[in-house]
Image (cartoon, rainbow, N blue to C red; front, top):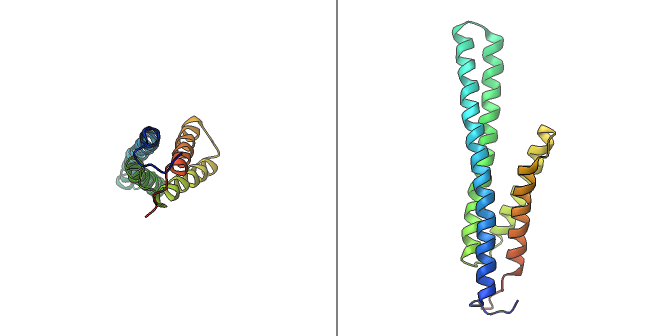
Length: 145
């Protein structure tokens, strides 16, 4: 690509990268929200165990609820960084925040897949989206000041 920041191709690439990171952020937000709701539901079982004076049920459910809520926070952080990076990409601002956010997403998705021992299609879609966005960031024209 040339160094002209008004190049139509760089605008199209920036919008495609923005859409790609936006999709990844949306999917991670959906995953995080779903896991958060499940954590709250499991926490309700813990409260029921406390009322029934079943300490094993209460401890196990409360621990599972805490883990689910922490995982939901992790997905929320990934979604927030992807969303912010997408806006930098849309404005064609070449900042290191974009590849850092993409790297965070890849590491987070792979870590979650290793922890659950399942790598599924949604993980592949999210990783493909951030890989494309990283490629777009690399291809954007560099401004010379």
